[in-house]
Amino acid sequence: MTSNIPISRIRDIGIMAHIDAGKTTTTERILYYTGVTYKIGEVHDGQAVMDWMEQEQERGITITSAATTCFWKDHRINIIDTPGHVDFTIEVERSLRVLDGAIAVFDAVAGVEPQSETVWRQADRYNVPRLAFINKMDRIGADVFRTLRMIIDRLQANPVLIQLPLGSEDKFQGIIDLIEMQALIYDEDNLGATYRVAQIPAEATSQAEEYRNRMVATLAELDDEIMRCYLEDEPVEAAALRNVLRRGTIGLKVTPVLCGSAFKNKGIQPLLDAVINYLPAPNDVPPIQGINDRGEIVQRPADEKGPLTALAFKLLSDPYVGHLTFLRLYSGTLFSGSSVYNANKGTKEKIGRLLKMHANKREEIKEASAGDIIAAVGLRQTSTGDTLCDERAPIILESLEIPVPVIDVA
Ligand code: GDP
Image (cartoon, rainbow, N blue to C red; front, side):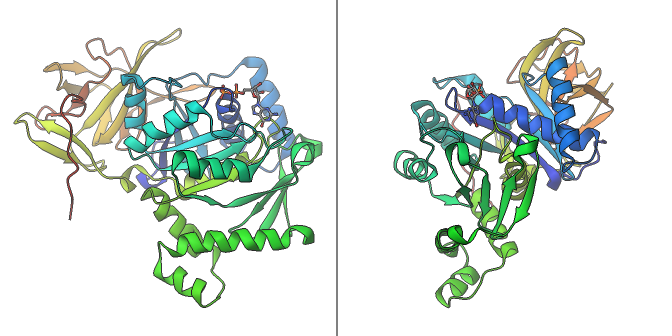
């Protein structure tokens, strides 16, 4: 795996949830599945999945890193740890700043809980595009539709159900993909680690059609061509729906809703597909803003050829490599061994080793560019919240006391 992934195929995301909704389990499963593709390159080989899972469980994987990098279908997904604090703290604020999109995990029985409401509002404040994952579909009392109502009533969101559950509680066996209009049935013999694509069962067809229509009706509000098809009762292609859903999600107009059971390994692969299909790449979101040395507000578009702009968002002490500074790169390219300017402190500091943290290993890299999230070893003078940049183009990204107005870019 190299760093040479185009920026359009990077996703910097967080996973947010009320405590106990399944954030840890969902994150772990994501790392298992992406680890399988990463190591073995074969997702549909169930045995490989299970062997890998057992092996990794024995060794104990690190998912508590501030940011973990994984791969899914030629995309790099950086999962940023979002603290589950109830309070609005600078730490939560900082983690929301460095991510471009998020998965909000809900418990299908409890629905929208107080803490899910709090993190949702924080994400609203930071304009973070989201997917909703209704987890624990295997539990007694699981109800996608009730949770969906709560998402509308309590979060004032505009959710679009893109999957229906097939069966529920101990009979939860898979989902109906309302975009492709097909069923994905999880393989019980393999603890749900693999699925097969099947026709929608006859008894579920009318409900699937009803909910696909609802999805089309919601998306028609965002797109004239879909509106025309909807009004004229013409079929809408899956690709067109995906396209509008992506635009709508990134534009914060809609929230795609998926369901599954992380614990039973059901629903994770479609969730990963949705991350790459609907959540934004670093260059799909508005450019980051900061203050330059003349006190002016400037923007830094996500461009690897632009001036170096990186935010130190977390400091960690790693037992093996020592002092780590996690950086989100917004613009430019950072090389190991180079010298950078800390605009907050007005000092220069040398970058030592650069690392990418994977679930099961650390990868040493020579350079990183716009959109990436990496850890630098041995930066002694840099604190969290500091901006590292090019001395000739100084910028301070975090200036929390100054409200940054939204600038309309034509
Ligand atoms: P977190 O606090 O949000 O990180 O939640 P965890 O991932 O630690 O999960 C909380 C509890 O719910 C644990 O006991 C999990 O085993 C359980 N859990 C997670 N996902 C599921 C699921 O899909 N179904 C069921 N039945 N239990 C789950």
